[in-house]
Amino acid sequence: MVPNTNPSQAFSVDLLENAKLHRKFLQDLHKTDVSLRFLPARMKQAEAQNALSRYRKYWLPLVIKHANAKSGSAARSSSFLLVPPADIAWLWHCHRLAPLSYMEFLRKEFLGHENLSDLDDENILLPFSFQHLEDGLKEEDIYYCNVDDENKIHAKKTMTFWETYYPNESFFLSEISPERSNTIINLSTTLQGFDLLQSVERQASFLWQISSPSFEDADFMNDGLQNYLRFLSLRRAKDVNVPIIVPTYQIDLFWHTHILSSIKKYDADCRRIMGFSFNHDDSLNDRSEGSDLNRAFQATSKLWLETFGEQYRVEGGMYRGEPPENFYSSEWSFVSTQVKSTKNNCLIGVVGAGSSNVNESANVTLEWLSSFDYTPDGKPTFEAMAEKSSEKGVNANPKREGYIFGEGSRGVGYYHEQTREAYQIICTRLQKKITYNEGKIKENECAMIMCCCLIPCIACDIKYFDEEIKKTRAILAVMEERKDASHPQGFARSKDTSSGPGRRKDNKDNRETGTQDNNHETYGYSNIYWDASDLNEAAGCGGGGGACGAEAAACGADM
Figure 1 (cartoon, rainbow, N blue to C red):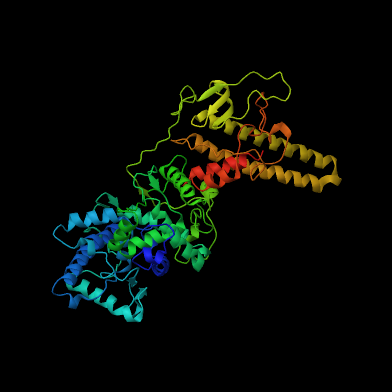
Figure 2 (tube, rainbow, N blue to C red):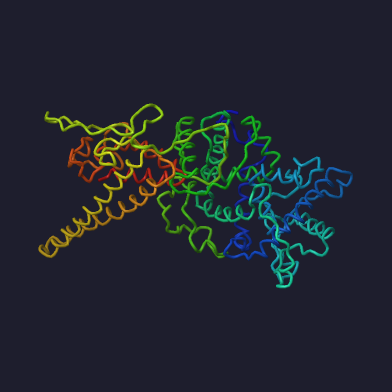
């Protein structure tokens, strides 16, 4: 399948239309408080077990019965589409987002069924639908999601179908009495290796990530569908040397929608586009330095750039930061732009989603090296500094690609980017810059007292140095985390020494020219070179802390 193929021809379901239904499904689950109830802070163990029991013991067997009826002699009487109750719809939604685990679980639980591949077909359920009734309300108060008047017959038949087999079990989730809570049998939340309740918790914030105004824009959604097709094409070569590929949130919405529309058709489309099945895994959500998600997004971004000649970033379709506190209320406004303040805020707009797919044939590992080691390509991880040149204008210690110049465990010299010492040097310089700017603020405060007429100008200087301190402290926090990460992430290295974003034209300490003052006490990154194009690539490819580190590197060069 060619990446620029018309998506309407590439996919066997209408992903643009279904993506709209998908977003409304998530919004309605949120507004009815259903998806929020499953969060650990809200749901008690007995309630969680009751919901899990309803899904596992009652709903899935009912789906099997319905599928058997549709394929058997009773097909005519079973010609309705399933519309589940809201709590089950949410659990089913999250379970099917791990299609491999979901189908394996069904095979294990319902071994005798011959048509398992048909269980999630469009002929079985009404996509992205549910019906909901709060305790104490009457049947006429049922809330329907993505069920128009014409399709309400499907919802009513689903309820009747349930009551036929489970006459003593309420179709809608109800409050559990203290007496009944003692009778509920605890079931494992892990279904064929997949922890369903953990997935429910992870998926609760997905709505936040796809609620930027961009997702209401038709052009943005059309581009997203095309990008999803391109994303799948990255995996056409199964031996591609990238162990995991990670989508942007723009792409991830279509990936989820494709799976949830019909697992059977999703699998068939993937086999046609890539030549093999393509699993989905939402368990990678650690955005810390050195995490698998961090490294995977970096690798995906590089692969995207090499394949399509574009940066792997789309405005409005990247990580939005962690949801604000009011998101976890059913009254939350879907046009809210407030972001919770966390250490990951520097990743906003530059990294992607937490979905992934593992390519087990790839084996790419980057490990920390000792300053006494050699890199895999034979380079020493440390080289001592040369003596200061006696010739005027000649720098005896020029820049070295992949190295940081400074003082570490082996003395002053060049430390390779795969050593922790390289990051420690950066952290030391950042701390020195903070101290330097704090001193400048004190100097200006004294000048204010002495020269009242210059107060406006001095106030501007103080504001500048204060902003520099805040920025540098944020950078330092990230670089400290990167230094302590389980894997090195490398640096965004320059292809030239021209000025650009993150590089100030300042000849003091030879910062622009890249020469190194041999007393290595300068505040600037005298021997670190950052390039705007590399910044864009690295900033979008951390998956987490890596991106933050790239931003930090770019900011750090501005010293």
